[in-house]
Image 1: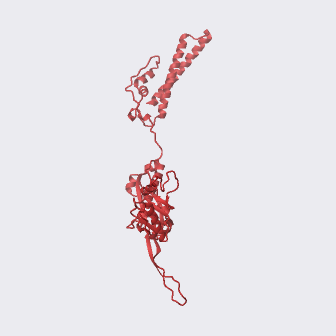
Image 2: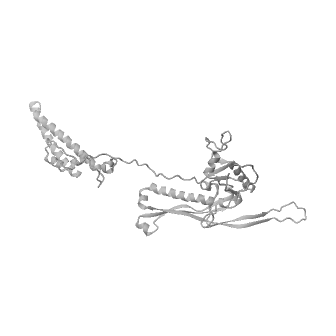
Image 3: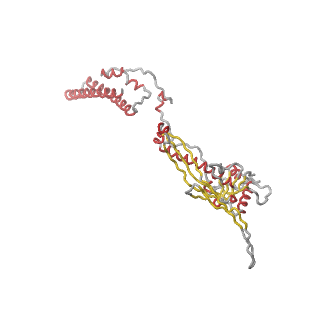
Length: 390
């Protein structure tokens, strides 16, 4: 419709242009002959120029609409659009008598509101970039453990299970005392952690950022479960045998009257040290660590907390890992580097594939992530667990 109006306006402009040219030539001839143009000629030229300007403005408006309008899109019609598309306006243009006035009753006044049906599409949404993701947990238990790799599905290590030291001073020609050391072959199977989600091929192709976001979220899902397995895996079925699960139960090596939680943690470190494995770290629930930092003396001064401090969390010179993978009122103290090691058989790997005919027909893909790892706890005595902090 707008294209037809554009053609009509261009034709009318060409016609007006010729009339302006003729009137101008006539006025110029009169000026040469009489020294000035007649009043009638002047009025005629003015009238033609006004008409020409109005047509140019209408043509520009139509051209802008043709450029801005998307193919096939039909937005709400303004009063101007209703007028130029009306049969009455087309007849007025075709008649060419622009000395007459033209009026057009609009069918309705379009209110500019947020309703798309009432010119609301004129308001562009303020779309923010990126994807707002839920909060993620800090995962740090793995950082405490000695890293390693393996090319097998089973980790085996020889563990000393018995030790009898009968070494003593002896005299010459006297039989020497025999000491005994017993060993056991320990096997720790490599376990697989995995999950997957479904997504449409279109959304992955149309939003590269979304694919990278999905990859990141899947990796976090796996790391989240990995931390729980390394710490508290039950060892049953496909579960890792976690450090806390194998740790030695706390038994105070010395008596301290009315011990506080800070006292108990120091006694747990002592228990590990007496087993010849000095503790290198402490794992607590964030609530327990916060309660310790907020503890005050009788004068209201913080005992270990410092509201203005920026030093990494630590107690008794050992780093503290606060994670929700631990239960409230429980603690784990140990020589993490010496007592345990994690073995990566296959690091976290993301794969995207069409798994079955149903996915193929629906333009869906399966995004899978999996890893294989094993955990060796060489010395359970190196780790002390407390299930009931004061």
